[in-house]
Length: 243
Image (cartoon, rainbow, N blue to C red; front, side, top):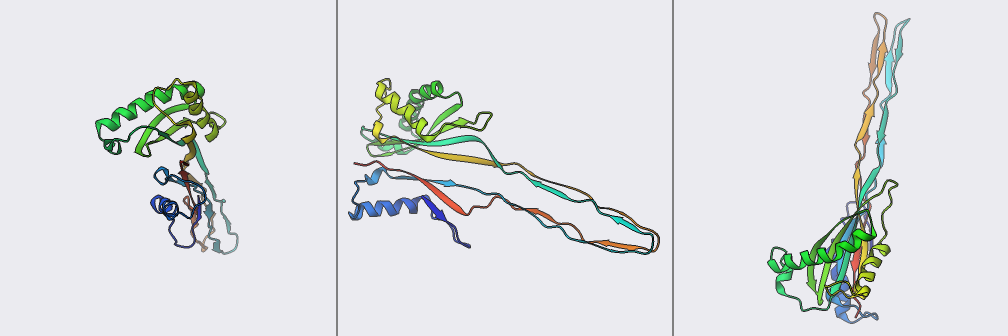
């Protein structure tokens, strides 16, 4: 879901984006069948960095035999780089939802999260050398919907698995019958969540001035500014289970 920011307008939050589809489902005006309780929305922000450099001109008043030399100023702003890729993995299990599953501090939540992690992680470690870990974010009703964050390390050439290949691993594990947890293969969705990190900005350069007697040299200061990452567009990823 892509939204454009204009002026000082703020982007909608995940809950308001979700509420629109829930309301559409409940109104009965959708021709496709959507399970309202299965709708999930998470924020995906795409930052863009654009360095800006402003340099003030030097003004010089000199007598005879005066030489003024100003060395150029160089400003370098590194673009955003990515070292790790995250995926949002969502699937449902045809089991009765226990109320304690919505409390991430409960023993019931901890036990199921640990079991989910221990069951699924071996398949991804075998399929991808870049796989780091799986983390259960939450359990919600319908019957039990599991949201997980999948973390992958980028290789030397900056590549990472795509959403389809991540999804295919779990689908194959379910179809093989080697999972002890119950996963509905048709409910599995995977979306990309990238965490960028920006390298620091470096500014170098100094002015050198040589003057004779009775000479006044005035140089306006040089100002260099590098714009921080700004966001002009917000993205949302949504997982929906169709009935």
